[in-house]
Image (tube, rainbow, N blue to C red; front, side, top):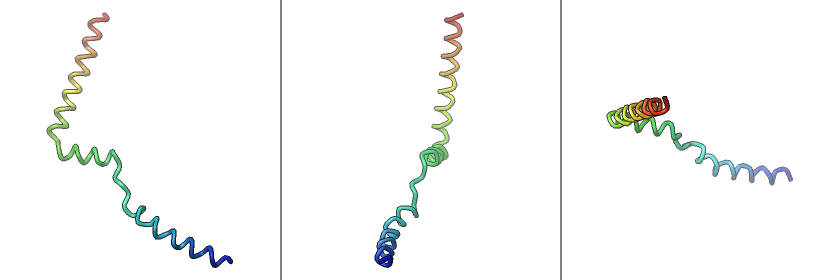
Length: 65
């Protein structure tokens, strides 16, 4: 009777193996790869965000002095 449970386990293993061999890349890895490909756009957005944030903080400090 223990032999009948063994083939069931071996048939389930190959079906789950292909899913485990190729995991999907993580979001961080995809984002880093995208930034490497588009260096100029990423740097431009970074500097625009920095200038915008500094402008907002300086503006708020001026209005609330």
